[in-house]
Length: 176
Image (cartoon, rainbow, N blue to C red; front, side, top):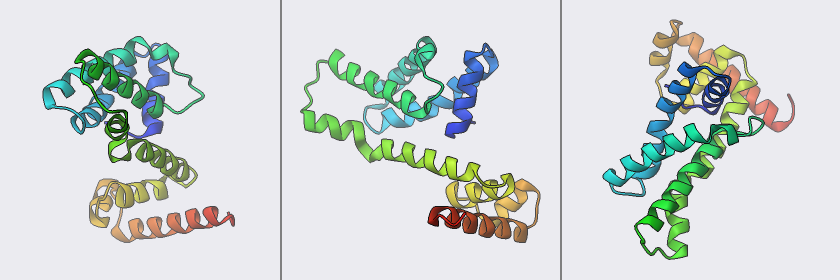
């Protein structure tokens, strides 16, 4: 299931171009992200209703997305607006300070920004190095699990991670 910015963005672009299969895959990939967003903030029954509302909003408002910009912030903005609408419908009074806390709980905006940064950095590496770093450092797989998944040796994974991290460090220092 696609959850990386680049994957979601590609699915959105393909969906906008008329690829129904890509659009369905996009909505399928967004459902767990929306569910996690709402379940941290609401009761499960309310969260499930809002997941459906967000998916419908993504579908009906997809033409408003600017393809020159990142996709996930647009998606999470829709989720935030749906959450605010939910509070309004319920006529729940929420102190403005509490609303900021509810919306920013667990720093989801920071997480999205960090994911974008990581994806951008990894995209500058050779595919093998990027995959090894993503699997072992971002997704938390062991060296052995990544080696098995990529059908390569463990030492190859270790070398790819080492070289990739070294290249990233050089780029971040401005040497590369």
